[in-house]
Length: 317
Image 1 (tube, helix red, strand yellow):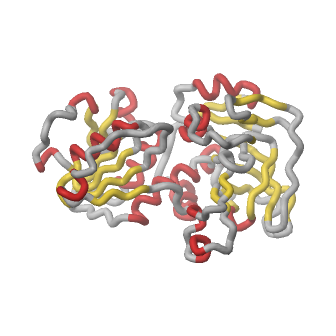
Image 2 (tube, helix red, strand yellow):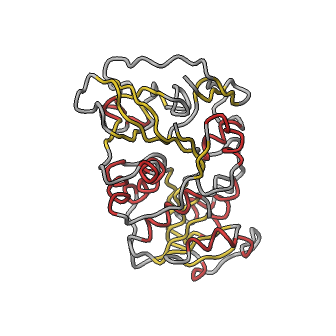
Image 3 (cartoon, rainbow, N blue to C red):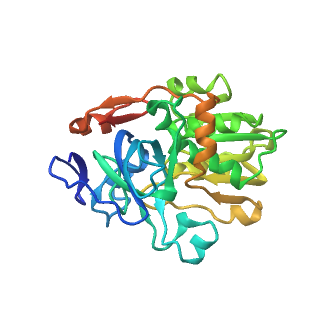
């Protein structure tokens, strides 16, 4: 089958990969559409140095083989973290933190291929009314929806999202539904234009690391969705005392922070990763969130796809 294989140095387009065989409790999925995530790009920069295999974790597909006959023929999306099912984390609803977890596209073969396998309990059928082109946003939208499952957003207060990229746009739409006074801080005037129907916008160039900001200029909730090290540094500057920072960024490398600000100002810092699929599917199905169309490429055009400046780029099979 056709696939994009990561060999530890870069991606290789191959047409000789074997079709995977589902293990017990797994299904074989024929991929319909798969999107590129910023994490995929970070893998190419060394984010997962031990990984060798097929990349990709955002997909829509059709179940073609399964012990669960109810899944066969269904159009589905799927979660990316498969735990051992036995450890404390798996037993207490924290499967995505299982020490033995297998992550599609990062520690097990992913969706940049014609077929992939996935554990049945991670598979979610989508309504017939929801097109694959829209359903493919389920995984990143679920990551955005993880935030209100972790912290209570008081709609009488204010919030800022740092980052005007794809994840920032999804997070902003989720937070806007709460009614909170929302501001988006970004680097690109043209990207910020997309946020203006539901949020205030400001260029990050207006913020200086050596300036102290008044309480009126700061925010009760600050979400870092920049994917860069300077995002958390700005968050620490503009969060109010006793406020909350949600850290969504993942990137290769390290960053230096003045951690004394956290206890002195009694700041809560929340790490946030993958989130719940059912409410994301519901929002997409009901049209309560919307995103620009995916720019589609053939799998062999992966270099163009990864270089695309579109809101989302992906592959159709």
